[in-house]
Length: 416
Image 1: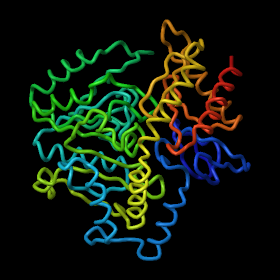
Image 2: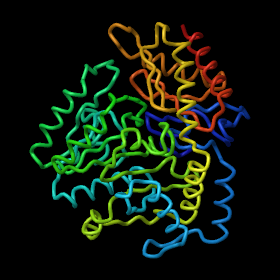
Image 3: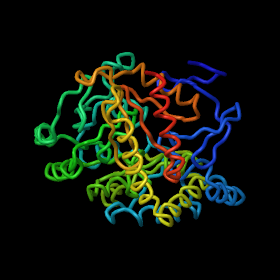
Image 4: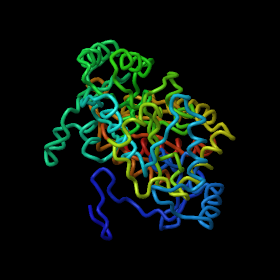
């Protein structure tokens, strides 16, 4: 779709015009206040247009807007220290980037340069960015024929999940780990790229069996393969911990951040790694990012981290996630269209099926539900496979969450 000279892709076709936002609400050009259950896809974790973040941006803008990549603005060093201070001590060096795609691309470069290996393992139906490497990692290759040839030496595996539907058969964790070990035994895999037990990208919300990440970490250490943990969606309190790596107490070799890192206030990402790993390969990985870590972006990110730590936002996410899960299951579990309700923290999926026994996704119903919910004043998104991904701002009150769920249930009932 092209509208007003802007190209929109088929996944995110233009639907409405947003004119503002505050806390758990967004506003459209018809002056409607709408409950948001998307956070801009795990971006506005602290609510839309957080006033504390706006204030520090104004203050920094009066000081300095830009620092060339071969220089330093004090706020960059301040934020680098603040971020690494709350990560495992092994993760002590930050590569400055503008977002998730760039962060993950840098991570792949580091892995290949540091290990001397070329192969990378990713998971089918995941999203790590829009570069050739990243779509090759996660997008089904039969959907990418127009872009071929794709990046070589990328291996796609199916992600084990607690819920099988559509063309997804059962893939138990022990079978997956056996298959993974067979690949790693050859000692030619530079890295495996994973999220922290839940797939946030593309709306799949596949939840891996308990122990998934810890088991991968054990195998990668055994065979000298790096673990790249993409925390673009799971980071900054979304899953009930400050970072998703805490869910299994895992220390990856590389971790990447974006989205919630600035709460949407500015384009910024980070690729964090051990300094002893990255320093020898700096000449090889070509770290060039013109707009990576502008002073304004760093000021916003520093304030975001301060708020998460000060207010223990991850505890709010864990508590409200349980509240959401309980009321969704109470009201929808027996519904003939609902196949599964699952998630971690405030990253929750409701999957709609044509036939529960055949587990056939009902894409049309999910798309209709998005439109009907918006009419009632609730903003949700459909991510494919008949799945609605519920991702409200983490600071949303339980009262507003309940209002949103009521609208969702009313919309579902009205479509039957």
